[in-house]
Length: 317
Picture 1: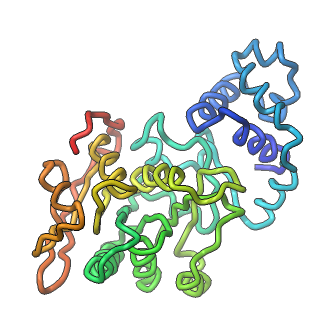
Picture 2: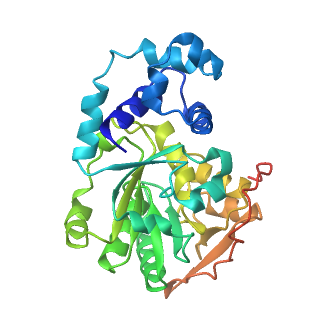
């Protein structure tokens, strides 16, 4: 994407009232009409109304002077990020297949883009989710399962947060495996964690960072909840290491359940009343990951039909 197209995209993406669903609608309408975003912003209001995008046009123009969009676009591209939309061939097919209309309309990508082919070219991926305040047993299990996933040639997908995410990414990089960082902030707010940075520099083809948020977005709880769906969408299955009763991991498990996406939850030998793993297992959709004195045991991952459309069903939790 060139700087002019990206500047126009950022202007529209950050306009008041333009969330992911609205942005998808705008991009779809413009794609169908073969109109570029810069061309759309040059329309007059009546022309925007003709393609039923008057409100989006107004919102974009209402804040046309609020940010230096062209400078932001140049900064993003100069730092090596690339941008793909739902209509680009480089957009991950698996993400569209799993999330359907909920797939993020735009991805900002840095690193080895080929890793995002997982799921469309025979590659495999496992998503990891769990509490930031994970127990030592949870950290050990996350690292062990990530190592075993790597040995089985799965890409490790997680959210670059402290705790479980960090442990999973670290184990993947230490094992010379591939990993996807799905971040909850914009690309110009992102800084790779110090403990991961050295390994990432040494293994430049082993990782890719993905953001679905506008470049200057800060980390927020809603962003973190939203990006959990993208972790699911980029994976064959979701592993829950430790889950609170509520919060991001609980919501991620609910999303996997609604999508009928394979969900695996650690079944600790001694029940931990402070976590919700047993509640997820008792709900009946999740399958257990056995843990004993030898550590965690990698489960058999159920294959999902690659042409299967995304499912929606009532909340089972």
